[in-house]
Image (cartoon, rainbow, N blue to C red):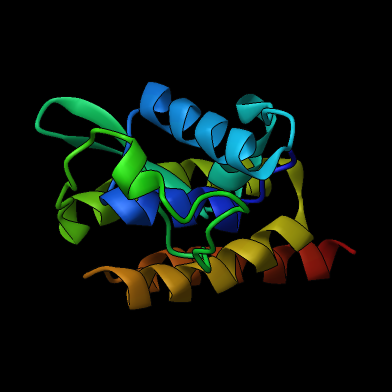
Amino acid sequence: MDVSADELAGVLELFGGLTRRELERALSEAAARSGAPEPELGPALAAARRSFGVVVVTHDGTSLYVAGPTAFPTLPEGGEDLRHILSVDPRDVERAAAADAVRGRYNRAVRAAIRAGDGDRLRELLDTSYDVEAWAPADFEDERDRIEDALAGLEEDG
């Protein structure tokens, strides 16, 4: 079972946030119900985090994966009954805390893209900044200015 960032986000939205172990179990249950092989969570989760479809937030002292600003949450096949199957109480993760977590990861991604001279990634991150602002109480204007300056520098060099 291949799982997309949007499907990971769909499972996470059901509960507000899940630990990695809980997410693994949820995906295992969904795969079993749909008759698909269990997904390899590592690569799917890495790709979802890189695209900001999934983010990690500390909630009540626990690291939780939550649906991120670029996600369009969709349940994977077999995921319809996960809320009834897993004995996990829904969690209410504050968007402000989530925005802080995104900002740190986002700024690291911007620095890496600038160092690499990766204009495509910078344009992707520029778009993501608007998604973050729509998703949580955050202002990413300074980050956009930094990206636009970097893109202008790349255009001058190219």
